Image 1 (cartoon, one colour):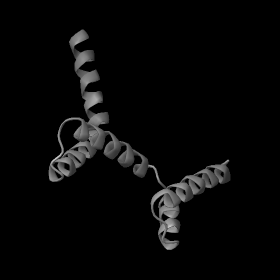
Image 2 (tube, helix red, strand yellow):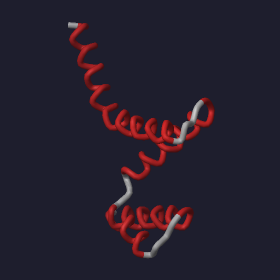
Image 3 (cartoon, rainbow, N blue to C red):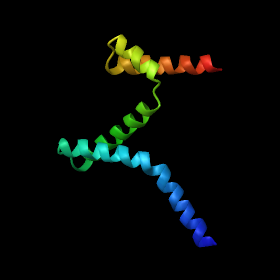
Image 4 (cartoon, rainbow, N blue to C red):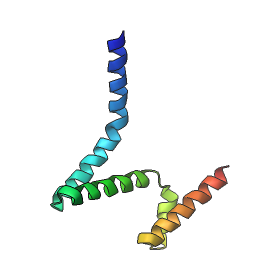
Length: 92
């Protein structure tokens, strides 16, 4: 019985880690393209995975709004953050 519970727990962890591993593979590929290693690679992977996680929860409407306004960098980030907050407030 205990073996079944342990096996089930590992299977659940595997299912939850699937998207993270896919992101990690994409980030690893980008790091390899840039020929990064050591601390530079670690830093790049951390930022890449963080950016990918943040992009996964961005509303398509907010993304389109930023693109329509031709925003980039900090202005785009700020616009999307405000847009997402406005959407959350409207849902309440």
